[in-house]
Image (cartoon, rainbow, N blue to C red):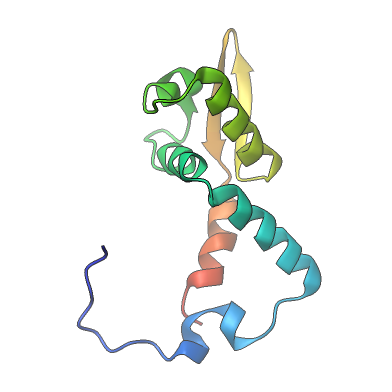
Length: 115
């Protein structure tokens, strides 16, 4: 559970662009796809492992060691993240390397940051 801050809360109307003005239908579809992709615990953890990686990218061979699921399952989850535009990838020999698109993090951050 997150530690509670002693700072006064931000008024809910200023908490997020989602609450200060309605998002347009196209943005709602985009955000829903991203949130759906991140709603799976394995995908959320994969995204976190990739995003927090020093050097900005990580080999799939290092990611699979972090989970108790099969390699094909990890590949499926990475495909979902890739198709949603959350991560990019490049094959190098027998391995695939993944990175998070910085503009995606920026866009997601704006959704939940105070206005």
